[in-house]
Length: 114
Length: 112
Image (cartoon, rainbow over all chains, first blue to last red; front, side, top):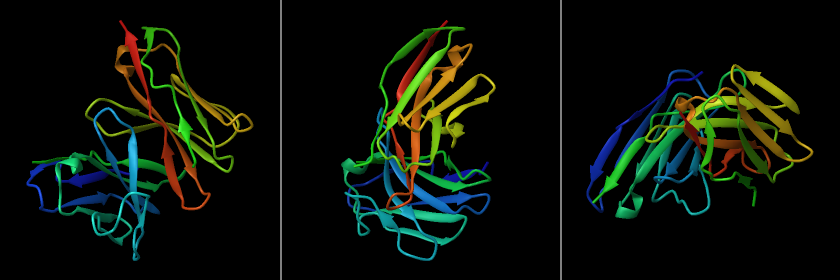
């Protein structure tokens, strides 16, 4: 299984600022994803991070608000831009790899916007 | 719209009983199916995956897949209070963009 780390684990940010979340995988993975999860809710896919090209965003999410980078097969960043209190959530990255192409999750970043 | 549906629960079972969690999916082209366990305040943890019709057993967990009925289930035998968590069903779809579609999760409570 892949081990995934995220930084920061939590942050409290002011409205209008931006935060970049880093995701590091301990092995090469074919795909990386970014999700958002509100308390008590299921996971919402923000985008698929593509290595060397632009991310693929889900409906309701745009690059200007959530720019994503993936410079190699083990690392990705998600930036939450011009934050508002509605962006308060847990942000999770995941990687798909392994012998059976399973998906593993990082520990999450708990973001609070005041 | 591809969907994965689960009963939100809570599903309450006594300790030592079998917990049965169910999931249906709409995309017939789905090939791989996953069960995750999520404790409150933690990220999802993969506990089972299944690709072929039939049963797959791993310890106290059995995943069952019926592609004709578009149905996936997870059985937990000898349920323990530590199994109390939310169980998420996920389907990996290759129709269009490749991605995982998650159900809303079933909350399981195992009563001591």
